[in-house]
Length: 228
Ligand SMILES: [Zn+2]
Image (cartoon, protein in one colour):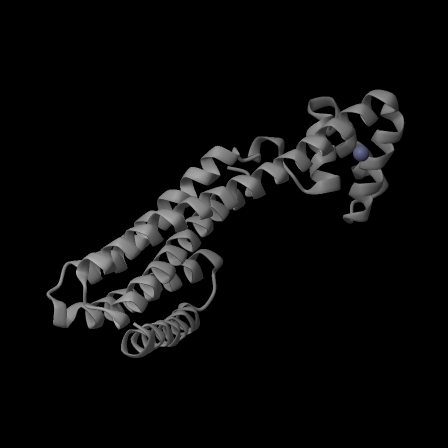
C-alpha cells in the first residue's frame, strides 16, 4: 500500500470515529434535555428517534456535499494538467525536474526520476507534485455519505438504548454513564488513529461531554418545572 493509500484509510477511520462521536453527543443531549423536562417515555423516545434520523441525514448530506466539491476540484486539476501536458510536454517535463530539485534531489537524479515518471504515468507525477493528490484515492461522495450515516447512527444507538431500556428512576444516570463511557471509547480510538496521547483525548471528551450533558439536562429540567 502506498502512503497515500494508508492516509486515505486513516482518514476514513477518523471520519467514522467522528461520526460516531457526533451521534453519541447529539443524541444524548436531546434525550437528556427531554428527560430533564418530562418522564414521559413516549416523548423521550420520539425526540430521540427524531434526533437520530435528523442527525444521520444531516451528517450524510454534509459529507456528500463536501466530498462532491472536493472531487470536482480534483477533477478540474486532472483536466488542467492533462491539457497542459498535451500542449507543452517539454515545459511540463521541466516542471517535474524543478519540483524534484526543490525536494532536494540533484539535477541529474531529478532529471532521471522525471524521465522515468513521465514514461510510466506523467499525469500521476504532476498531480502528486503540484497538488499532493492521487487519482486512485478520489473518494465517492455516495460512499462517504453512507459511511457517515452509518457511523452516526451506530453511535447514537448507545444513548438512545441507555435512555429507553432501563426503568424510569435509572434512565438519566444510565444515559450519563453510557454516554461518557462511549465518549471515552471514541476519544481513545481517535487518539490511537492520530498517534496522540489517549489520556488527554479521553479526558477532554469525557469532561466536555459531562459538562455539555449537565447543561442540556439542566435546561430541560428548568423548562419542565417552569414553562411547561
Ligand atoms: Zn506540471
